[in-house]
Every structure is written in structure tokens, then in C-alpha cells.
Image (cartoon, rainbow, N blue to C red; front, side, top):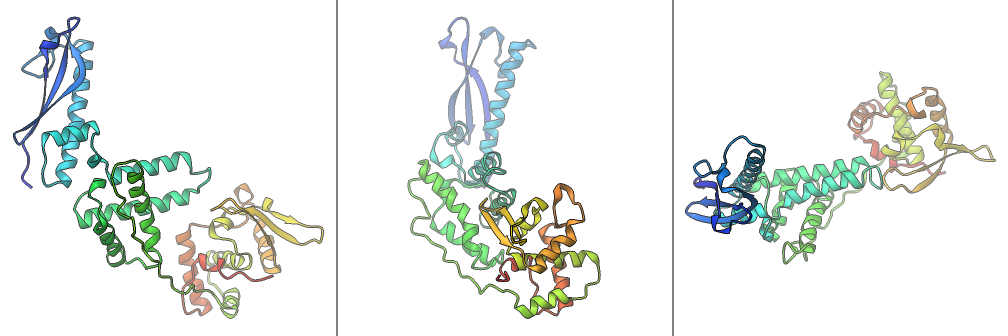
Length: 355
């Protein structure tokens, strides 16, 4: 698109003088189109520099007025640039409406997503949601931003432009360009659905483009270790301490059903012994906050005894590293154990030994 001729200037509406002051007006000019607006500021005509389109002098009053005018001009310029980046046509009235926040067409998808993430961070993380949930939502935001750039060459898009084909293209993008599996795509699309529903609920768009649209997940059979494979992991001769620690944590998860997040925060205070001298884990799930009770089998109990002596900060039992590091070390464990696939720490949770 050819570059538009864009100009913002300020002038006085002298016929509306009141108490020695007159209103300051603004005018946007783009490609011959003109749109005027009130700056909601007033100034003495004696203090106005007509040629410079601003207050004259260095008085505090003049500086304050000029600072506000410059902010108005800057914000209008930002809206102008946003519209230039995404639309094939642009008018002065369109830029003015965008700056003033009028019109459903100026409610933007990624802007709304960012506001959602900020609100989620401030009001929910650490209260009823884990920080890892925010990280997952942020990854979904990055996928959506990448799609906008890939498919449309823009950084944001008005809700009014989201049609059914937008969603369909996004699903195809996730599958072909990002290489996501069919079982993971619905979850990635979920936050886009929330954004469009928010726009519909708030009256920004007349129809939710997701209405009648559904992404059907296609799940693969979940891979888990057989008893023989788990025993091979337990018996594997490993080359270094780091790999052995990861193996022990994996085995502990297999014998308790604890998730990565739960075992990472497990402390000695979460271990209880009942009247029959049997040990239990009584804790709350990191993801849901739901309380759970797990009886400790001999192998799991022995691992707790072994690692409790490390005196980690906060009486944490196991030295759990970040998830990627754990899964990388499990690749080495799998090789030494002779496994035909590379398990992740998540696999252990789905291989709980029955009591």
C-alpha cells in the first residue's frame, strides 16, 4: 500500500471564548480526508502560537498544555500506524475513531489477549492457578501472534475481521507449520475461542465466529512402561550421579502417581505415619489444589529415606530440576535401560504401581 499523507495539527476555536480562554481543537488530515476533534483543553488566545500550533513561551501553563498536545499527537500517530499495518485503506475519521476507542472494528484480538494475560497474572497466579498455567497461556499467545504474522503479515487484527476461515486457517497452521499433533490442537485453539467469546459477550462483534465450530481431538494411545521395562529402569547401571537422581525421581513417581509439579514441591512435612506404622503422602495437587493421600510402597519409602538426608531448602525431599532437563536425562536412562522409546517424566505418572 502506498504511504498515506498524514498530518495532525492544533488550532483555537476562537468563537467559543469563555472566561478569557478558548478551546483547543485538533485536525487529522489523511489523503485529503479531514476529521476534527476537541482536545478537551483551553488556553488564553494570548498564549497561543498560531504558526507553531502550540502554546507559546516557557511558562508552566504552556509546558503542560504542549505536553498534553504532544501526547495526543503521539497516540494518534500510533493508531495511524496500526491501521496502516493491517488495513488496505485509511481515512482521517477511521484514525480518529481508533484513537477515541469508538467502534467495534477497533477492538483488537492480541490487545485483548494481552489484557487477559495481565489480569490472569495479577489476580489468579498464586491464588487458584499455578505460574506454569500462565506460561502455557503465554505460549498459546505466541503461537497466535506467529500465525497472524505468517498468514496476514500483521501484529494484530480487529475482531470484526475474524471469520470462520480465520479459525480454519489457524488449525491448519498449527498442524502443518507448527507440526502439532491432533490431540494437542484443541487446547491451543481454546484461548482463541475464549477471546472471540469475550468479544461477542461484550458486544464487540455481532456473532461469535466459533459458533457451530468444533475441533475434534484425535488422541494416540498413551505410552507407558511395562513392569519389565520399569524394572529395567530400576536396575540400569548409570554413568553419573545426575542421571541416577533423575532415574530415582522417575521411579518414585511411578510408585506414587505424583506429577512433576507435585514431586517438585514434596517436603518431609507431607509424609505421615499412621498407627499401623505405614507411611503416607498427604498433600494437595499443585494443579487443582485437591487433597490426595498416597500410601508409600517400600521402594518409594526407601527413596524418601535416601533423599531426606540432603537437607534441601524448605525441607524439599527431591532435587528436582526443570522439566526439560529431567526429560533430557531420562533419554540417557532409557538408553542404558535398553528401552525402545524415550519416556518423559509425565509417563511415570501414568504408570502407578497398584497397592
